[in-house]
Image (cartoon, rainbow, N blue to C red; front, side, top):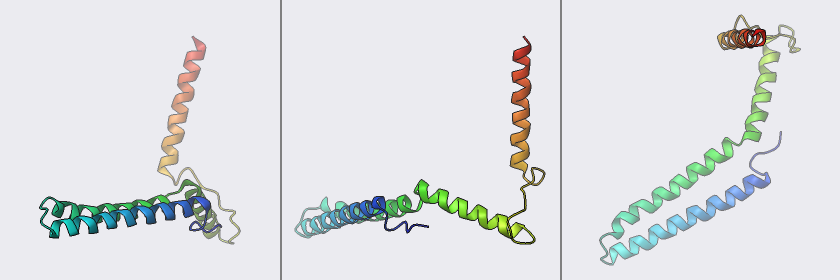
Length: 124
């Protein structure tokens, strides 16, 4: 499995996040100096800019951890691990049963309903 922190997209994301956080914190510092100099409305901006920086950090974290490519790899690894743990001999031979999965039962019932509709249209 590749390291998600070092892919090309992730490195661009790191650099962009660092730039945005730095700009937001610098703007907050600038507004603080203006507020201390007597500009009243700058107090609101002094509080606002650090929140923008925190939001940029949160967005960076979410984008990095919810990247579809890595989500697929994690899902594949999780599926392999659950297959191996479900098998008594650990070789992954256990098969998923539709009787145990209510979502799969619903899916099968819906597919059967669609087949019946399709057959009804074909008869007319």
